[in-house]
Structures are given as C-alpha cells and as structure tokens.
Length: 267
Image 1 (cartoon, rainbow, N blue to C red):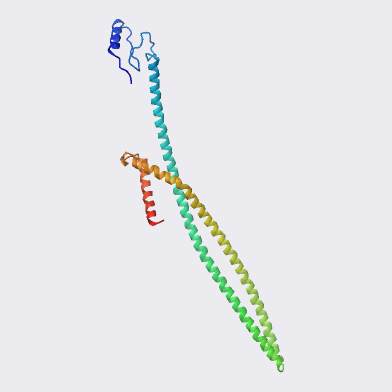
Image 2: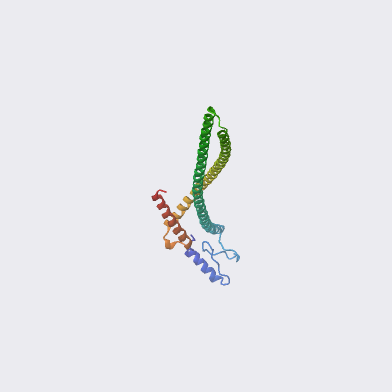
C-alpha cells in the first residue's frame, strides 16, 4: 500500500512551494513524498525502494492478467476440443448404426439365400437318387425276365425286344449318370458359394468388432465431456452462462436423458 505523506512532509512541501514558486515539487508515484528539487522530468520515484515496489506491483498485476488470459485460452481450447469430439462421436455413432443395419440386412439375405440353395440342392439330389433307384430296379427286372426267358425255349423276338430294352435302359442310365454328375457339380458350386458367404459374414463380423473397439476408444472422451459439462452446469445459473455454454448444457441434458433411458431399458 502507498504510504500517505505525514504532516511534516506536507509542511516542508508547503514551505518549499512558498519559497520557490517557480518550480513546484512533484510527488513520488509510490509513496507520495516530494521528489528532490534537482529531480528531472522523467523521474517518478523518490528512491530505488519505491521504484522496486512499483515495478513489483506492475509485475504482479501483469502476471495475474497473463494467468487469467492463459486459463481463459485453455477453457476456449477445451470447449473447441469438446465440440470436435462431439462431432466425431456423432459421426462415429451414425457410421456404426449404418454398418450394423447393413450387416443385419446382409446376414438376413445370406441366410435366406443359403436356405433356398440348400433346399434346391437337396430336392435335386433326392430326385436324381430316386431316378437312379428306379432305373436300377427296372434294369434288375429286365435282367430277371431275360434270365427266365433263356431257361425255356428261346424266342428270338423276345430276346431282341429284351436286348433293345437293355440298350434303352443303359442309355437312360448313362443320361441319369450325366445328370447326377451335373447335380454334383451344382452342389459343389453351391458349397463354394456358401463358403464365400461365410467368409463375407466373418469379414463383416470383424468390421463390427473393430467398430465396437473404436467405440470403446471414444468412451474416455465422452466421460471427460460429461464431467466438464456437468461442472459447467453446476457452476452457475443458466441465465449467467453464455449462449454457447447454454447450448452445450442443453445438448448435454438431452444426451444424458437418452443415456438414462437406455440404462433403464437394459441396453
């Protein structure tokens, strides 16, 4: 604190002014004492002690102002960082939800396609097997008839008919065999397609796992933002906040309400 000049100082100053009206004495900027008569116009302090005190006071004032500005800059940077993180979080949520929706659709389509292909392959194989069994039974019956015909008197017309039937059955058997091979090829193609679908499903599941891991990585940012905005909301009344801070607090309140609803719902 600046010391007030005492009565002696005032008396000496008054006496000096009375004796020398030409040059009035100037007071010290720190303690208020009169400067020496020989003091130059640039001199402001009566002693080095007063100069040091004034410099120290100015230094403390500048330091306090610098500290306040630094804290204000840090607060602005924190708000900007929170805004960027909120934007990144919103984009990540949209991406995750879109990927999940697309993955569920792909899974449903893949399961439906797989069931249809398996059912088609099963029906085709069953039909081919039934045809083979029927052809085999007919060939066995014709062979039995041929053996029975050779026991008694040989009728050439019956033999020719039987031989022609055998040739027809052999041709039909060859046709059925070709069809069976074609069905086997189709089954192999369906199996390869199924393996490809399984591979695509595994890739999609891995991508979903990576997205869940990214969500866990963003969790500390969300928690830090929640803590900061909670402190901001409790620090002052809404009317005392700036428009930007009120917008942040409203957004935080909406987000918190949604989070509480999800927690109650068991999500």
